[in-house]
Length: 264
Image (cartoon, rainbow, N blue to C red):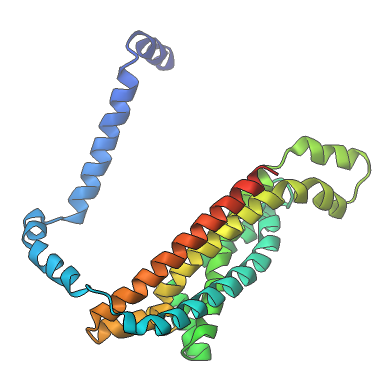
């Protein structure tokens, strides 16, 4: 009876539904803002300190361009290997967690593994591998590889679950084995989307690698932290500008490549 009344109410007054949604959003965001305990007066009075810090970043120091390029190359190398390692390990985990491929018990275990990996911040992974292998790029590469698994496995899983099930049923009716169903039914549909996700993760890992430098895991982030710790802000700005240029170039290139993959 209540459902009938509600449906009649919404049909008669169509503005009630969006008004309720807006009211719920206002309540939720108000609750979140209250929990943050933001001091707006403090924010207003802190502008001089912010502008003072930004002014110290300029002008960039071109004398450290060679160091920036060396650190950047190491960052790209870390991202390339970290993404590749993570992608290779993510694929079987994604297959095991897809609800249209794997049994329920295996899905549960694979999803639990994904969630466990995603719950560990990249900084913590960097600290773990720095303790295991010492300072430098190997620790950052391993941290990126594990960090990548948590996201690519989920992306690959969603791509597998979006496969047209009718094509899989056709192969099964024809007597195809599970391997053949995966090879001829799933892989051709998943490959373009999976490659697009992998390229996106490679871009992201370049930025993540710069953050891992904070814990000594190599790359341009290590140099950036060193300059900031030494109050050499002009040199730190050079590092950030070099990273910005390279990330922009890689983003433009991978976006074009992803569009081509989507059109396949």
